[in-house]
Length: 185
Image (cartoon, rainbow, N blue to C red; front, side):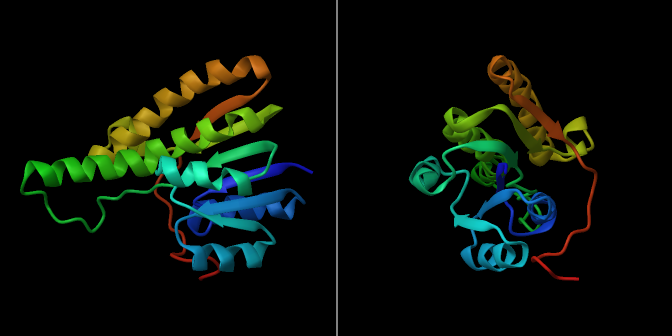
């Protein structure tokens, strides 16, 4: 049985990925910031759940004792466009906050969780990061830049982990319509 960790696994694409692995009989751990959402999702698909903010080095480090000792598949799905619903920046501090929010949510979350779990990745393991076609310059500002950085980092990660037989790839979906919470229609 494979040990699978899916960040941002409580809703949307992450939930669908976690459910697919669970349906194959894999042992799945989903993570995210909202404990109630994770608990509901985990119950629906038969997964374990662990609430923490993947963009926080302190929270990622604190979670290590509860994450699997061996990880066969890590799916870095946490993130999303943090600019949605954000007011138009008026000050440079607002601009900086918007950019940092997207970089933290979409790049640093993957970097931190992967760095923390790298020693636990099984030989022949997989690291899959969820990117976006926004990385291809579709006018997505800080979100697209964060996803482009994710792609660049993944290329380095693949070279680093490759000698252990571990692959690292980015899957970049286009816009998707997913439920705002698990199990919603």
